[in-house]
Amino acid sequence: AEAIAAGRRLSRRLVVVRGEASRSDKLLDAEAGGRPPREVTFGRLLGLARPELPLLATATVALFFSSAAQMAMPGLVGHMVGGVIGGAAGEASDAKRRALNGAVLQLACVFVAGGFFSFVRGYLFTLAGERVVARLRRRLFSALVRQEVSFFDANTTGELMNRLASDTTVIQSAVTVNVSMGLRFGAQVVLGLVLIFAESWKLSLLMLAVVPAIVAVGVVYGRFMKRFSKQYQAALARAADVAQECFSGIRTVRSFANEPREADRYDGAVDESFGLGRKKALAYGAFGSLIGTTGQFAV
Image (cartoon, rainbow, N blue to C red; front, top):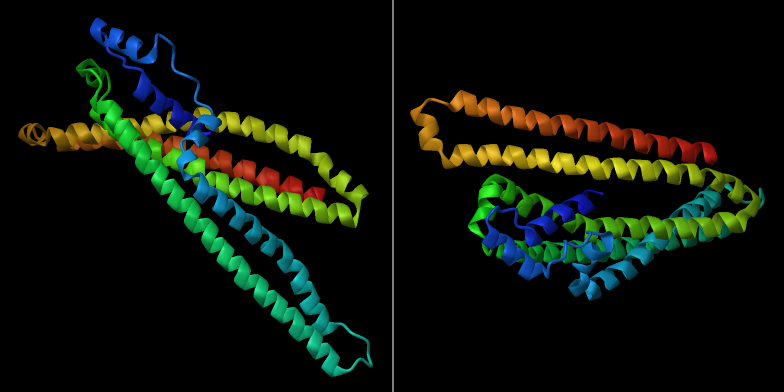
C-alpha cells in the first residue's frame, strides 16, 4: 500500500507539471500525448525491476529451497527427540545411538543448506533492490531538472528532496523485499497445506473456514494503510520542507533571532508525522494481533 501511494506521487512528479504558465501546460500535453497519467499499479511497480529479472529469478529459487528447509526442520527435530526418549525397553543402545546420530546429521545438513539458500535469497533480493532504487532516482532526478521553472514555484524544494529520497526507498522495498517475503510466506503456506491435507483433509477444511474472514479484514486494512501512508509521506515532506527553508535562509533566521520560532515550526511538523505514525503502529499491531489470534483459534 505504501508503495502504491509513493508510486502515484512519483508518477505525478515525472509526468504532471503543476505550473500555471500556458507554455508549461502545452509542453506537458506534447510530452504526455494529451493523455492523463496512467494509474500506478503494482504491476507497473514490478516493471521497474524487469532489468533485474535474472537476479530475482535466482533469488526466488533460493527462496523456495530455504522455505523447504525451514518446513523440514520440525519433522527432523521430532525424529531426533523421538530417538532420545523413544524406543522399546529392550532395544539395543547402539541402534538407538545410530538412529539419533542419523537424525542429527540430517538436521545439520538441513541447517547448512537452509542457511546457504537464505544468504543467496537475501543478498540477491537486496542487490536487486539497490539497483532498482538507483535507477529510479536517476530517472526521477533527470525528469525533475527538465521541468519548467513554474514547476519549482508550485513544488517546494524540501518536498521534492523528500520524494527523491523517501518515496524511491518505499518503492525499492515493494518490488524486492516485499516480493521476497510474499513469495516466502506463499511457499510456506503451500507446503503447509500439502502436509496438513495429507494428515487429515477434514480438519484442514475446518481450519480453512476462517480464511474468508481473514481476507476481508486484510482488504480493509490494506485500503486503510494505502490512504494513511499517503498522509504520512506528505507529513514527512512538510517537515523536510520546513528544515530546508530554515537551512537555506539560516543567515536571515540568525539576523532576526528566529531560531526558537523555526524550531517550533519543525517540532509541529514532526509531531504531525509522529501522530500519524503512532496511529499507523496501532493499526499494524491490531491487525497482526487479530490475524494471529484468529489463526490460533482455527488450529
